[in-house]
Amino acid sequence: MKFTRELPNAVTIRKIAIGEIQIGADTYRKAVALTADEVLGDWHAKPIADLTIDDLDQVLATGPELIVLGTGNNNIFPPREIMFALAKKGIGFEVMDTGAAARTFNVLANEGRKFAAILYV
Image 1 (cartoon, one colour):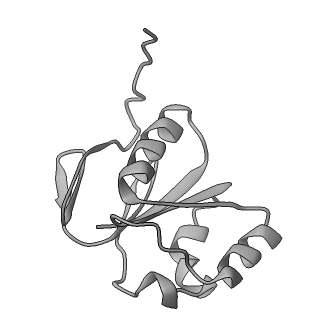
Image 2 (cartoon, one colour):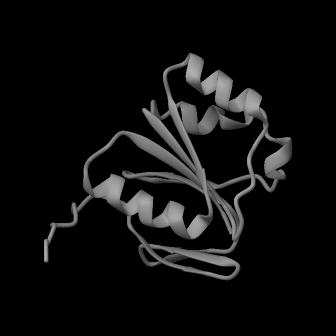
């Protein structure tokens, strides 16, 4: 069994439940954007299928190498134009259900990676 030390300044997702995400001691009942260092705040409730690259401005301002999109209970892919625009900027983009995205978030945060996540509940 391998043990790893949780970084003291890293944001940690503690729990995912139907309709809520617990990040540290705070519970969010709306979609949220975050990095390993900070919760950026509530994410607008725009449907994933309607997202544009401009909707990612707040997340892109953090200078991520990778963006993880958690799409709720099911995989829902955003418009491919977002993927193309991020690829042109050299930014990785992963889409997965929110449970998988939360697990990925915690692993990446503990590795000290430069990334951001958008998690829909």
